[in-house]
Image 1 (cartoon, rainbow, N blue to C red):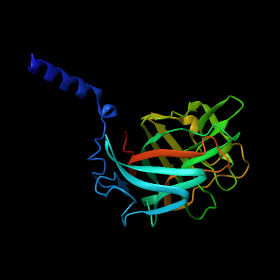
Image 2 (cartoon, rainbow, N blue to C red):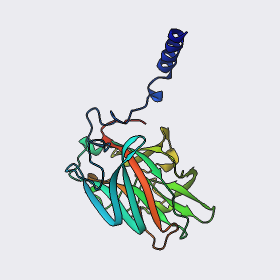
Image 3 (spheres, one colour):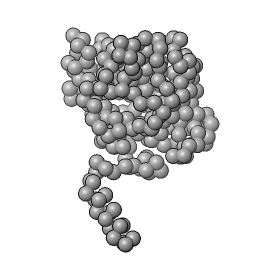
Image 4 (cartoon, rainbow, N blue to C red):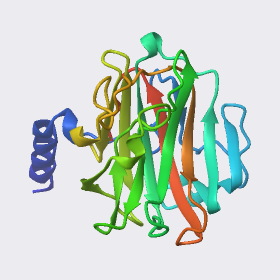
Length: 252
């Protein structure tokens, strides 16, 4: 019976195909990647590595042990920021994918229109600060939602939150994004599911008349920043794991 059960399980897994495959924590940095960090090799405490830098204001980053292995704990006070920073980044043809596993203890519920971002890409050739993962508290619903992934420069997309993409608190989720200079497109997946309503492109960027143009990305920051003072809650805690940048989509 055990043999039959094992064969049945193997058959079902085979039928599920690549979409059902998941990456285990310890091999999440396997393969030819542009950047990867799963924190397993780092000591606990303040980050100690030459592979990436830190950008903080009223915030801290620390490596902790968790049930899933080691993770990065980010803590900010008020409208502080805490980012892992990848400098001297270069993707072939300026086209790349990102992946991040994330758990946020609580999102802001005040002040009205509180805006937060978790991924930021900048570079030369464009004034845009591209923030593919971010969102906003909307008091008119009310609720907190993920928003369209273009932000700095002329776009103003941070106001383009989507009711179809509500945030989830205190649960691990997988976020993926892609930046593609063909059409200046920014794409987002949440837990492996495409979210086309969060897409930005040359002409799809909050209705702004000025075309959206991706920079030649040389810096990627991954972490947390809130932009309004006096938020509720007054401090934020989140945990990140299996951060990767690649020339191809990695999946969850």
